[in-house]
Amino acid sequence: MERLETQQRQTKHELNALKSHLDQVERRNPSLRFEYKDPSRNFDRRQVIGVAAKLFRVQNEEFCTGLQSVAGGKIFNVVVENEQVGKSLMDNGGLQRRTTFIPLNKISGNRIDPRIVEEARRVGGRDNVWSPLDLIEYDEYLEPAMCHLFGQSLLCRDMQTANKVAYDRNVNRTCYTLDGDRVSPGGEMSGGAPSRGNTILAELFSVNQQEIEFRQKEQLLRDLQNQLREISGVAEQYKALSEEFEHKSTELELIRGRLQQTVHHQLAEEVKQLEEDIQNVEEGVKTAKETVKEREKKLKDLEYKVKHAKELREKELKTADEQVKNCKKAAEASKAKWSANEHEEGSLKMELDELKKAIATADEQLVAVADTVKKWEEDIANQGKEVEAAVKEVNNAKDDLKQQKELLAAQNKEIKAKTDRKEKNSKANRGERPRDANAQPQHHQIC
Image (cartoon, rainbow, N blue to C red; front, side, top):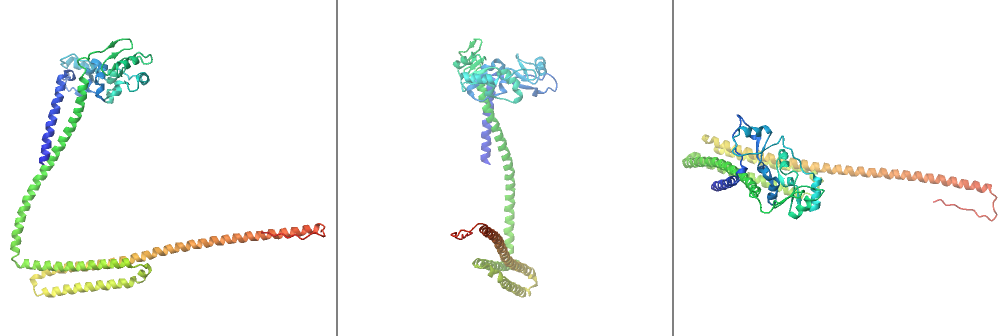
């Protein structure tokens, strides 16, 4: 908690320093502050958007001087929603200096043609020529005002590039350098020593970065305050609970001291001994269960397991019954031991309840054995299904073999029929032609 409080004080100090710096920038540049009084009752101040220089953010500080030269004095114009707001402020706003307004609904301005920008980059070099609107960030609804400030000019890296681009007949646009020099396609040039206000956008660039840091610090301060509030509540609750715990602990120690001198304390000690005995019985059951599990792992023949499952189950049931009987005997012995003392009836009931839990544990052991047998039976059933599937595949193979044999027999039969017809035709041919005395009989073999 002390660490959070220290961090909170440090964050407040940093916020105050940032706020002081922002105020100094505005005091050095009074043109950035637009002060007026409401021109009418219920005037909506949201219609006055602000000084143009504060409505956009320069992406890189190296462009600040050049962009300020492009915008010129228009950078201090005040952007309003419509011309009626500007007229009301001029008539009844109590303005202390002359002000030019940019009404968004009336101002006209267009972006420079992208084809001209591309041509200018071809002439001056892609990394040496920029459209000013591509170098700033602003809200979309301010597009008309930004086009009015920067729309039809180009920004070049140096004077040499500006001369090449401005006088190119396919570009023909006024160009400004990063140092603020100006070259017009009509031949007019200006430059040299920078003007007095050339550092305003650079200062605003620094201010924008600090405003981002300012908002982050504000959020951090809010988070720290929330954490401190939460921790403060928890700390108070912890303190109250600690005091109550100490009080109750003291009372408990006093009660324990009185109980140790009573018959009830002695009975409680005997009950504790009985609980330890029951715990030993439960550990014995747990050991027996682990032994059964080890024997299960050693069984290899699954069919043998199923075959003797009934016998094993009866054996386990018998063992469990013996344990139950032993527990009941112990309960009866305990009951007989304490039956002479009627005032100890409550203690006997506690013992019987614990013994019943032991019986329930034994019953759970029986259920576990039954589940094991059921699992063995399921394994045999699954293997039986696999055997049936294998038999089915063998039968299918036999059917396929039978069909192949039948097909082969049919093909042999057809071959034999064709062979018989061929021999018959051969004999008929020999009967029609005169036999040569020296002719030898021909034998044909059909494969």
